[in-house]
Length: 251
Image (tube, rainbow, N blue to C red; front, top):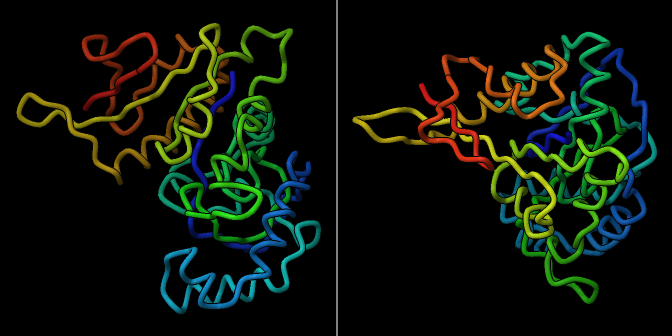
């Protein structure tokens, strides 16, 4: 089983005793993107990233000096955001990290796909960024089927064909379009029951995704059926609203 999650816009290189244990699998492809981003002027980068002057300046300086192989930090403790706060990787045990390194994958506009302990540097490049160059129409085109193929590498292991989607649609669609009929692609939905109807609230969804990853690591979950036992933040699996490829958790 592979669990896919989104990255976070905010990143930090806080001092941490945890060292990177692996390299991003698509480091060479990431370098192609870095070289292109380095070539952009400040106004061009601002337009591409669609952010304010302060954030553009930060990332303009990052890309001018970026080195993907030096001063790296483990991906799982570099991303900051609600999902990562509730996952709380900085207090993971060694067993939790072992589980995450085997099963958890972070999707990325720059790196494609990351293991939790892959060494990365701060960057800003969302998957939906309108990056059109002479070598790609956009980042979905640039990554093509590479991410999906990496997620399903272990052909001899039937469980490797199970992908649990805890990512946003922006990132999930980089994988979903390549899923084969023989694969199992399950999306987890976290919803509030309001006046008889279900509503997804962004902040709560991010919180629940982080809690779900932690729950799976704590319980060493490798079978999709066992995910249904999740009760974090008061959510409960709903047989009424769930389908084979969509697990709905309601509170």
